[in-house]
Length: 570
Ligand code: ARG
Image (cartoon, rainbow, N blue to C red; front, side, top):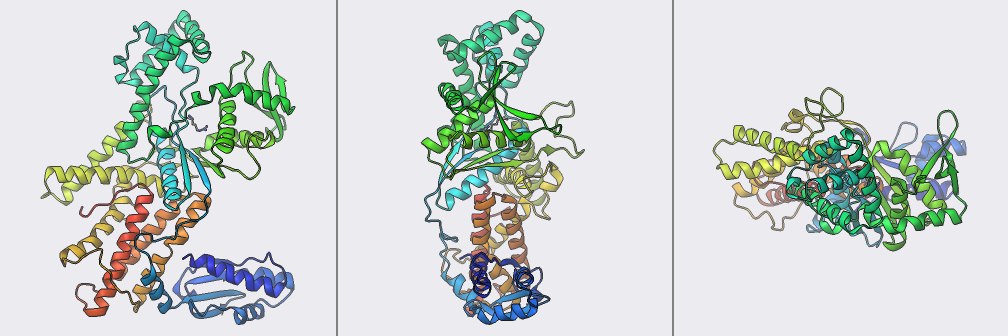
């Protein structure tokens, strides 16, 4: 159950009754400290001001009308108009015993269709670190929607159709069409680029080949296809290594929209939205102006007839809304494309490509920085290949495992290192607010202290070892009864899992889930220190084992939503 939501609703209702205004809203938060109860309701003060009443008196009035005896032990009025609510131990005991251990969170019945566009790298080159954040963050969001029972459709909007492909095809022709040389896409791209820059004839041919490709020339298409297939295979390998859920079935690349682009221009034209500017066709909307006050165009067709990134995105919006029937379309794409998405969203709505009730959302994220505060690069200034980063992470984790646990077999160390290395990279990213730039730092992400993957994996393994040590069944039924303050804090936290997951679906910030798991692990550790489990007896022991069991299940489930595997030992 979502206790915060229930309290929110009940208190809002009382505020509405008293004021006669049905839109009155209470704001319920977790109390910062136990002296303010467990939840604190706010909203009385604003209402008092509006009604010109003494806030304290109004709070008393609200309190008298509130029917919270099912949840609350005490309700206090604090300061000018705060209502502090302490949840009763009986209520917590009852809720935890009722919890469905296979589900943990009640799934949504709402059959909303959510489309999520993430990872979506350009295929001309190999995936590099710039693709890491969107891939990891998008995957956590996708997993959460899916787990919560939504119809979730992944779209990997690969960039497979740009002008670079003319250059790559031309180089492939020169090389006799051999695909064997493609084992290293990066080297291949660089060699082709060098030819393009050095030789005007080559460059002219490359431009010719783009046009040929886009108008369906068989030979060009064939070479292009072999290149794309190999690139996608590379990406799939990386996804597998990173435990990312994207598959070949989710590939709906730019080229998919090729035959829909002329129709998009026609639609815009019919609606009178197009303006010609320097030969290009553009949409100008009042809301997009630069600092000087000049209107900013959304260019949809170049003067040579070619289409643009925005045109494809407009076709994508139409497809996602009209064919896939999405209620929400989420774009996990870096912050620098913010203006682009605002523009195409507004144009799409205006042109009726997306209906009013379809929510188009850009879930943006900041840049990955090195420790020096500059965009993350190799020493020589090149972009870092994703595969190299992953391998380094696993290598570093191996060294760590070896120092902590030298007696394990080599195979076992490797298995643990794979999980720890990948988790550390993913979690470090997920645990930061996605809007900020983020500093990539091996030492802090591999630390066993703080809000890190190793800390959480260790906490989980430690709980599991309690059951193993005592040869107890970790899946048995244990009856919980909340007594001590540490048990209560842990119980409250366990019940908050629903709140956190539901909030994640609303605004898509996985860092909130990370923070929750970190706090849960901390609450567990405090409980475990204060309340002996295996040294206790009878019902008390049963109850504490029950809390251990729920803590492990919740940590495991939360990490799994983030795309992180757990380990029974580390
Ligand atoms: N391929 C683009 C890039 O690498 C990202 C695509 C994001 N999705 C979209 N529908 N525009 O920048």
